[in-house]
Amino acid sequence: MITQKEEAALWILSDTHLIADNLHDNGQAFAQMQKTSQGKDLYYQEIALKAFAKMTKEKKPVAIIVTGDVTFNGELLSAQKFAQIFSSLKDTRLLVLPGNHDIYDGWARKFNNEQQLYAKQISPKEWQQIFQVSYDNCSSKDPSSLAYSVQLNPRYLLIMLDSNYYGKKEAHTAPLTRGHISSRQLLWFERQLQQAQKQKLHVLLFLHHNLYVHNKAVSSGFVLDNADEVRKLCQKYDVRLAFSGHIHAQNIIGPQKKIPTIEVASSSFCSYDQGYGILQVAPDRVTYLRKEFDMRPYLTKIQQKNYTLMHFHDYLKNLQFGNISSRLVQSEMHKGKYDLGLIRKMGNLFAELNFNFFTGHNQLTSKQLEQIKASTEFQTLIKEDPFFETYFKSLYDTSGNSNLHLQIKY
Image (cartoon, rainbow, N blue to C red; front, side):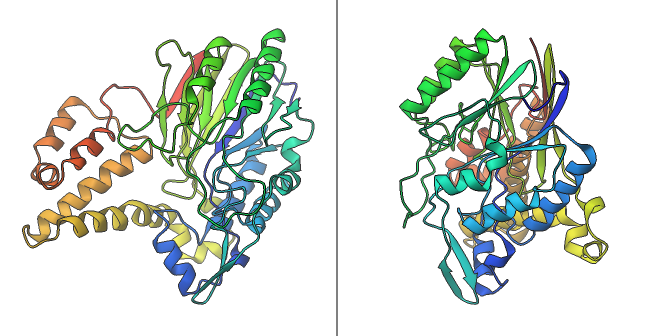
């Protein structure tokens, strides 16, 4: 048991994608990797995570839970660095589970000048050794995977599932995006649920892949291959709340049909706007709030002289949405048919809708939606490519439900 206190705070991170600084030289090959990283920051994650660890030592949540993709592409040194960064925590337990990029990832690389070179990958055994603090005094460990459970306090059980496909030796190909819960792990999972039911414990579920479709236009590879089986167990044992990552978007969905589970998908910590979750548990309720991390108070005096670090969210926003989305639209639309002003408006619209979805700020009123649809830039985009209309529909929500906070009462 982590704490005897019946009221406690847990913090949730996802998709930190750390590549250790000693795996690159800021050279040409690494710069090219940054350009193709789909908005993930690769340069400053050691600094950002060290700052987050400083805030953790100050605020003292009982646990930090990381829902996978701890490393950039499964480099052993990156996992070791992550563990080292949080090793000084005394009042906070680090609970980590792997993502699809963490175990035997054939993309593991180090970068030297113009070259990408082999970097040692992480085996399941090494993962457990590196993050032994996560498995220390766990309630149960699944012998067939890296899944485990931890009793948080007298009222709550945390179940950490391993939803990833990986082999028994180092890989030479790209990691699989898809995920599943193996049949043996499902049996272990149900035993944990049965035990929690006997002990009258509320279950909080954590995994990397998603239980539900969070974006109808882009869902393949994100939802568990056997999500139905997991959801049936959640229904049978009344699991009310689950947390996942993988899609790099902040989105809350559920319950669905007869499934009582609400799923919180967390955005990527290495992307705009460094989102993390605060989960407050009490005997009769759970509350969740997404927050943006401001690392400036936790930087060293030397780091505070760095313009990028002191304007880090501007840097991340430009990295993820400004340049990338605008270039995407311009590359498709700049065919001599439209003036530069309209092209920029199309790029800005595409970037803004993406930004709002990925950070959980995609709630629109009917009036706001009508204004967007009536705009020249929107109409031009869907005329050029009907997929934009389908994709845009997946990015906004007029239901009024918040993706930033929730409360569940037991």
